[in-house]
Length: 223
Image (cartoon, rainbow, N blue to C red; front, side, top):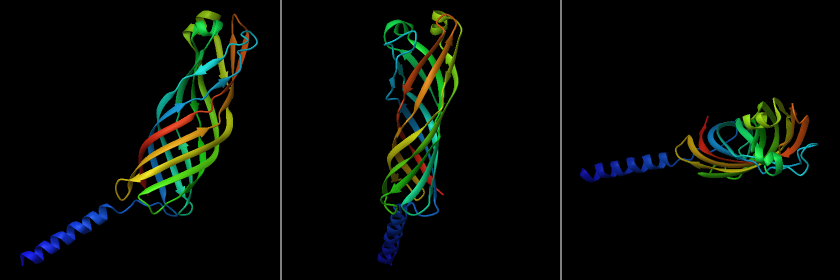
């Protein structure tokens, strides 16, 4: 009797362990929703601030924010991901007159990005993927800093929106049947021209290639 009960208990535990180890999987028709914490780190390269400050370039700081993304699995291996996040960045002078001013302006950046992903192991508990796609970046709520206003008077700042490409690599790690951990890295092609209409220095422009790395870690669910 005791042996029979023991066998039943062991079988039950084994079944429970097997169930808990069932991978979340990613198959055709699934919708994967991920919530990530991201770091947006520009690999900026700028022109001079022209025409007034030749040879003086700007740098753009790294920003941190939450992000949400949605992936639709068109097949077991092919998914389409749309990300939504917005971050705030500041541009600063590096050398010369603009360098002494420091932070020149700030802007919010909204870069909706759509990628097509290839998932290498849709039935695995560890599922790496790569992707490529496009983004359209919107710059909004651009503002001069107090330091810039003090140096050149009231200033209006505007930045051109950008259309570019994106590359992606990531991996999902199963935690439960429907919950998984996600690590993700993207390279996004973002180029803009910033225009500063100042009182004392006239109109100044600077071309900036932002081209950030977007590094994220988060939790995802399968629906």
